[in-house]
Amino acid sequence: MTLCVRFTPAADAEFLAVVAHIGADSPSAAIAFKDKAVHALSRLGPFPESGRAVPEYPALPFREVVVPPYRFFYQVRVDAVWIVAVWHGAQLVNPPNAPSV
Image (cartoon, rainbow, N blue to C red):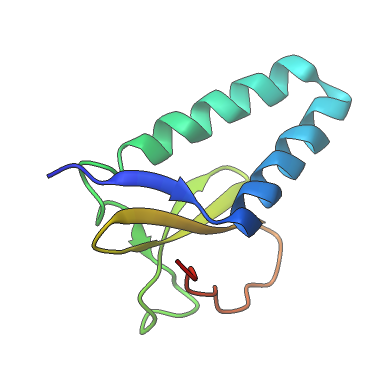
């Protein structure tokens, strides 16, 4: 069964901010990054466990997909794969929040 991949409102805002930030310097680089990220995240639908456990918090129920230099944190739920946060790889990681859906 293939799950839908969805963004929480907070993660969606973070992703859009990243794309806008990249686009301020290079619109073509922003489009390329967005396309690469969407492609990488789309594999979570059929393969929700394909991301790695978050190294800083291996006991939490979150996984991540890295699209350099950004990390996309997600949680698999019954109804969907929820992207819960988007962080630059240089940021210190706080535990991601579970989606409130």
